[in-house]
Length: 254
Image 1 (cartoon, one colour):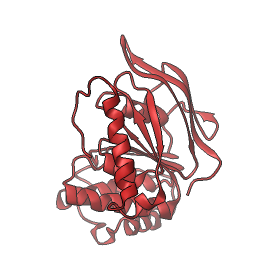
Image 2: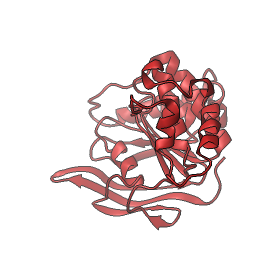
Image 3: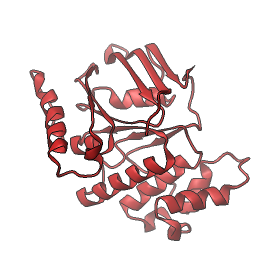
Image 4: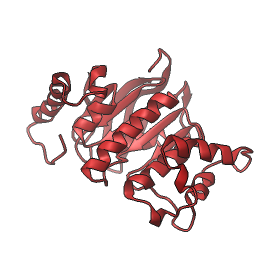
């Protein structure tokens, strides 16, 4: 799915909040159309890195380029999906998606219809968030993020609050969307299986301050069949990365 063109270039990225260093000398290139999963312990700075890519935070030093240009502020060309769907409860599904569009957008109805169809929720266009399940609400959030037709979609633990069965279904939905839309996706997750199932590469980060410990390329067969031995071996390799440090002060999903 990816091409030779670089979508995101991170060079010697550092971030600290007062005396607390969160990111330490992070460098990585992400290709256009690539799906990259980022996994690491809680507090390692992976979400901070995502927010810097999205223009929601500024680096202390280093550089982040998106298609060759420095990130200075949020852009409609960079979509964001959070763990909380953040739908406004007093607006319908249609209204929530339209709220994300530029007021000058002329074909808003067609855009809403297209992306609700993509996430399988066309029949719920007039529903309110309270009438949706958690998984359905997250699908609306993804449709809203896609409505601006972003070049890059950033996903910060979007399925973390869902039950296991719904989560697996949402992973499959996201994979389908990635293939159809062919946009660059960067996923933050604590779930190693999720990282392997979705990512073409898995970036493994150390504990705070966050550094890149390893970048694992994923065999495409892992995106179709979780029971294959290559899936288990890739997952186990990443699992073992966490135990190379003296302490692992957290628990996470395999």
